[in-house]
Length: 281
Image (cartoon, rainbow, N blue to C red; front, side, top):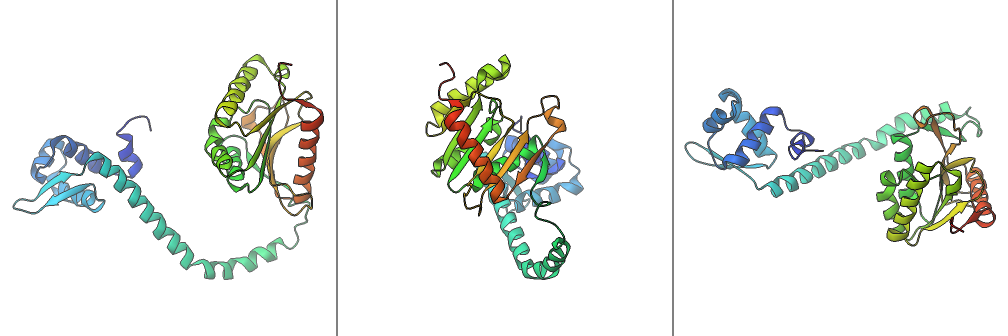
């Protein structure tokens, strides 16, 4: 949202409801005919508009002859908006839960029958587009991490899009480490982005480990909770294809414990033997 009035659209108000509420916030307490006159809303529609705003808790209805209508304070309108949405979600969640048993009884057997012939190899990866979908999956991995989070990246230019999830992970005590490509191997503009990101991490998330690979990185991505007994872990990765723009690429996700353990061994070896803590040295 770029403008204060965009809140009305976000809330889901109609054009007439938005016009009426904005005008009420300027006029204060008034009657329906006066508001219709001030806004140009047809008199045949104004009462329905005001009833809808009252139902949402955005205005007060003062009994009398005639009735009068008074807007709630702006902060109350915002609080009521959030509460309305919360109640809607709780109702939605309750409806879904009420149908859970019937849904699973109907569709789980179908899914299991259809999945019988899928080989373990076929289930090794699934893909999402690079950009908003891959960033959404990356945030989910951060949110799901229980113990460790490892990031392999060139410059971590997407930090802004995952920072909320990173901050939550750090606050939960997750062991986070980021392996950057050495800035000497990056174009000047990406090296500048990397420098800014590294400075932010040091200032805002000092517990996050940072090192710089002195060799090229064949892939970049995130892995969480790898297990050397191959029982857990999940990862998202993007194989380096310099000639293919990101918007034409896909990222691979895997929940294969063996594969994620192998990625962890790669990360640990580079971290220990092919990286430096200070790229200036």
